[in-house]
Image 1 (tube, rainbow, N blue to C red):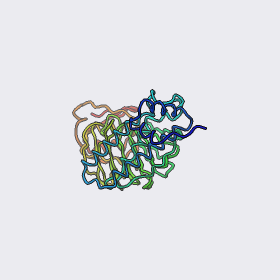
Image 2: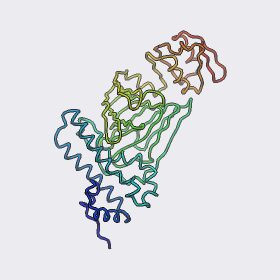
Image 3: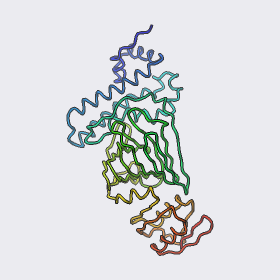
Image 4: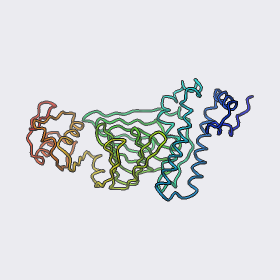
Amino acid sequence: MQQPIDKELLKKYLKDNCSPAELQQVRAYLLKPGSRKILHELIIAESQEEWDLQTSTALESDEQMREWQAKFEQRKAARTIFLDQSETPHSFKTTRFLKYAAVWIPLILGVGIYTFNRLKEMPSTSVPVASTLVMKEFSTVKGQRAKITLTDGTLVYMGPVSTLKYPDHFSDSTRVIALTGEAFFEVAHNPKKPFIIHTQNIYTQVLGTSFKVNAIKGQPFEVQVATGKVRVDRINPGQTEHLAILTPGQQVMLNTLNGPAILGQIAVQDVRGWKNSRLVFKDQSIGEIAQQLERAYDVQFSFKNAAKAKEIVTVTLQDNVPLSKTLRVLSSGAQFKYSITGKNIIIN
C-alpha cells in the first residue's frame, strides 16, 4: 500500500521550493488517484493559516490592506499548477472540473480577500470538489424580464437581454454567480457564505442585502445599493484593487471595467423601484433613454435630428405599460414628436 506523501513536501511544492528530486517525487504523487483532493485541501488550509496570521493584528489603513491583498494574489497566482499542462496529470485535465476551473478556482482560492468590517470576518473554508458543481444558465431577450429564485433563497430580478450563470447548488463556503446585463438582487442573509457576483474582472460581494448591478455591454458598469452593505473589487493578475464599500443610497460607476471608480448617491426608492419596472433617468440624453427602451420593448429608435438624441432630460418611466403610453410621457417631457411603424420609432 502506498504511503501518503509528506504534506510539508507538498507545501514546499506550492511555494516552488522543491529540489529536482523532490519535484519528481511530487509529480509522481499527483498521478495517483485522490492526490488532487489532498492538494486542494492543503491549499485551502494554507490560505486559512495565512489569513489567520495576517488578521491577528489590525489592518488600520487602506495601504496595509492593499499590500496584504497583493501578497495574497501573488501567492495565489503561484498555485495555478492546477491549470499548468506541464505539471498537471492528463486525467485531471480531462475531467469536468477543467470546464469550470478558469472561473471557480480563482474564486475559491481568493475568497479570503473578500470581507466586511476591515477584513475581520472570514467565511468557512470547507470547499467541495469543484467538479461536483453543475452550471446553469438563464437568459432573457428584448422585451422580457424574469424573476429567479436561487437554491439559497436569493431572489434575482433580471432585466431584458441579460444572462445569469449559477451552480445547481452552492459550495460550503461561497455563493458565486456570473452576470451580464442588469439585475436586482435580494440576497438571502448568510454570514458564513458570502455572495459574489462577477462580471469579467469586477467582483461584487455581499452577505445579505438588496442592490442592483448594471453590467450591460457598451454601458458604464454600476452597482447601486438599496439595503445592507456591498463591496466591489477589481481583480487583475497578481493584484486586487479595492474600489468601494457601499451602503444604502450609494453607488459606484465605471465607464470602462478598467477605468476609475466614480462614487455617487442615488435614491433608495429608485434602486428598489427598478425591480418593479420603474425606470428613473436623471440628466441623461434622449439617446441613452432610447437605448434602454429598445431593450425593454424590443423596438428600434432612430432620430431625424442627431442633436435631439443628445438633449439631456430627467424623467421617470415604466416599462411594464404599453409602449404608446411610455412614448407619450417621454415626448411630453422632452418635447419631441414621433411616429411608429411596426417596431421602428422615428423621433423628429
